[in-house]
Length: 474
Ligand SMILES: [Ca+2]
Ligand SMILES: [Ca+2]
Ligand SMILES: [Ca+2]
Image (cartoon, rainbow, N blue to C red; front, side, top):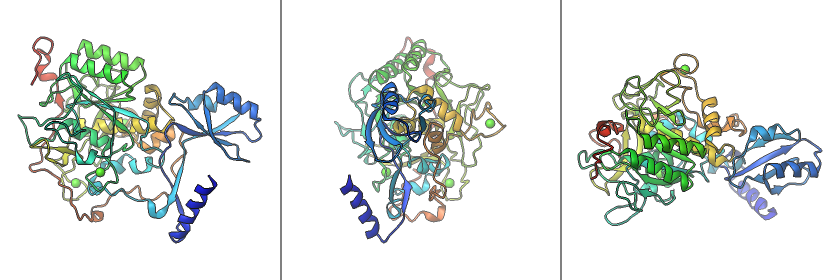
């Protein structure tokens, strides 16, 4: 350790005495526990044993100890109720000012949706390492296999083996929709919002770039899926270690198998996130309508609800997240205000960045912030994650929870603080809100695809009536 510290100091001096900026990412499953001054060693040991915490490092003379949570949920509130415990915090990381700054993803400057939900600030605490997000969708371009190619901006992303419940095989690859070939492949787009490889000089930055993606294919290339496929995907993801399920699809049909699968996932404390729908009307679709699922609506850059974003009665919408509106350019950057993802269109190797709008794009933001919480070690169960997300949301519209925005706009850094991370460092540089003047791009992002297409939410509704008897398989 002494050698490592010395090397770090030398590096700082070598770079010209730049002040170390407090920033950075969490060490997964490790937290710093503060004890009251003078707490006896035996008393500390009792607390550690009671909460099944293992000591990683003690520093002489300090009342703080770095502990490992062994992947189990940490009840920080219960810890803080221990008389001997004074603080519970994530592991702060320091680095030279020169090493900080915006990620080197060429399209990052166009990702207005990231600063809007405090993503760069949240990376000071967690990048999602240790969290597994199952993307229940049309598949993901996660491997080069047969005719399929791995998406360039998923090259460094961690994947957990998934499953294909449409073709019933172990290769949940994403396809081009033959009926709308210029529409970007949906599951890949969703997955990259969550965990595109970040800082790699390609494409976009993900919201939780350290999270692992589990591709679970429950929708065919046209975006349709049946009750049994959805249910099988949910149960499979839960049984294979997913912490968070992203479900960017909806139906007006309350499928009995999906309903039971959602109840099973909730019983295992797996966080479920779903899109409210793109009908623009006041009835939230399933599975978002199940109370166990976080129902996510959309907002535009000006934090208002786009016309398409489905709302409900009070309590039906839990949160909102950036969903975009490709009919406007509110930030004046010359591009329609869509949500950028990295996916393919027109051909399974036709990769690029596409701007889309929809609650399908909003939900992955919340799934990714849930992954940041899980990765921080400070919130792991669905109950803990929901509590932190709701408590920290930025209230929008009518004061307090309302039918259009629920608790409000998801806020990644505030959610981590709500779960027990230290507050954001005052004067922390740039929440990196990319201004339009900032985009010095030698390699301009290929946005938007022309023409900009509206990615409507994939809906099961159209086939719901026949879903149980006349399964559509491509
Ligand atoms: Ca990237
Ligand atoms: Ca714009
Ligand atoms: Ca409100």
